Image (cartoon, rainbow, N blue to C red; front, top):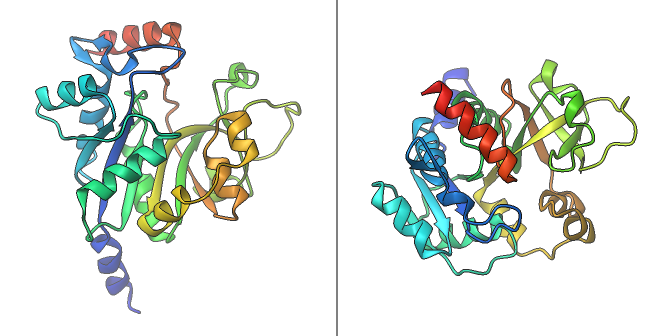
Length: 256
């Protein structure tokens, strides 16, 4: 195949972005509706998804308040059933509701990372398509201060992704006992799924590790589904606690 033909096929692949969101987060209730610069957190993330220009963006939620908040802001939202075990189960229902057969990949963009870099999202999409990934995700440099932080998920890769840009994941963990582990990074909670893999994934039982660590990506590894990891240049700040929210609020208000 000539290089030009390969590039045409690459760009013919179609991706949509789905953002799972719910009000019942235990550590920070009503998180998606918290306001920064007079705009809710969920709408900040929705607009970040739009700014990538990758494809259509929808918020998938089981809560009417979130649905109405997105629609009020001229966004697109899909109302799912309220109770889902994971965000991936929720975006799968949303994808089913769309009833589309022209989509190749689905990005699961977390609704609590409004500072995630647009370029990193675009790069994830492009490299996943280029490498024909089943699932791909982002990771960045692990800062020393986050080594013992259980809210910062770590990923161990087979190769140095800073140098090679992409490698497969060996393990995901919350605690690190050995600081000298090679190729360990700060995992960023965004995933791109091949549609066929997304359908397969939600049909699998939750693995024991997934349940105990509350990391749904472990279900994929448990079932021998490869996860590619793409290096991100920026270190986003996720909103898990009220302290996180106040920190990110201060950052975003300063930037505006």
